[in-house]
Length: 289
Picture 1 (cartoon, rainbow, N blue to C red):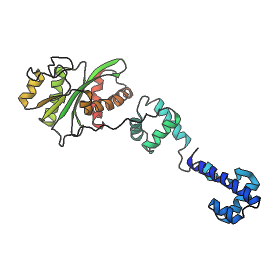
Picture 2 (cartoon, rainbow, N blue to C red; picture 1 turned 180 degrees about the horizontal axis):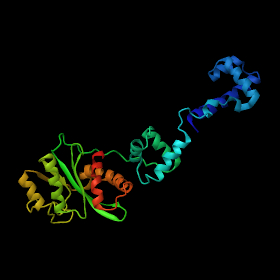
Picture 3 (cartoon, rainbow, N blue to C red; picture 1 turned 30 degrees about the vertical axis):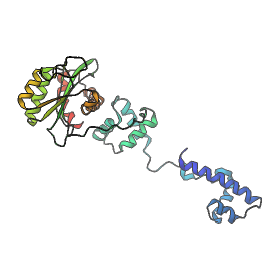
């Protein structure tokens, strides 16, 4: 029950008690009205309505009438149909962006989310756990870059590695491409694209993959003396290579991959992409993430 309807019901119950006291002569109209927080004239008006129609005569018809601002049923139905067909698999924010871009849609994100929740086509997410303080971003672009790969089923039946290189200061993606398998060659390709586009940078933050570091013991510390080809090349360029020792330490890139995995497969499906070559033309959408 809505709060306004609940308050109205409580008010009617209180009135019925005062009405009985007034009808039995224990209270006069002025005293009953004062206890209800209304004027004696309004109390008498309520009495006439109650005597004529009972409790139903006291219901506020305005609360039962549909809002003048309510969306037409056809608009809601069309929006739900698009979500379940054309944009199946999209998250709400991604879906709302396409409604604005492609369907001359004027409703807000919150309105769209509430309609999807009310219709039961999207389940409300559980409340997040306690907030964890994140590492502060670098104050300027170029001070630290992240490079990482993500293996995922980007189109049905096809698992590729997506290699991205992004800036720690603003999460801007400087390089992104698909390969069959992450390795030294893909790392050099990403670094080349970044340097040609943005110039040299100060440091690179990566996982402890074998193409970045030699790690004598599984899960142990890296051997900074026995350098890889990537590490040696970065040293020549004056770029510091920094190893991460947990997924949480690479939270910036992990969150970026979470966003991309939640959006890019739907974009590729919507565009009818079937091969890696066809997917290359869609890398411009990275700038939106």
